[in-house]
Length: 150
Image (cartoon, rainbow, N blue to C red; front, side, top):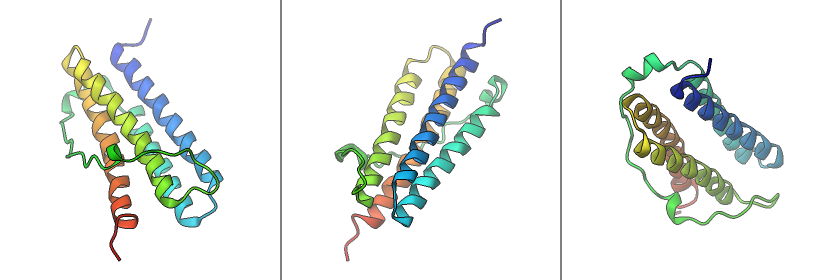
């Protein structure tokens, strides 16, 4: 017996969360600055929360999902990502993380628009909202730490 399309989507999203956890943990291993390391590890922790949320999500629970999407600050949309190096600054690290979340947000937004049924659409709405929370958190950190006026 094959998994339902909703379960397949959930499994796909869990895999994406695990990839993100591995990405952030790998990045944390390359960062020497304690503040940068803490930021990256907190992102890995956020991805773990998403993984847990998805693992506990059943198709029946989707009927209770509401669109709680907040406005997109779109700050990362105007920034250019540079590859990570051992000399990367906190600003560059934040941009790398924001761009990663931006890509996930775009994926789930696109899939939400293409969904053929309400349950699938609600699932992508939930996933989109979670990625937007991450992106917004990083953009606010960028505003506070990088764009601040002294």
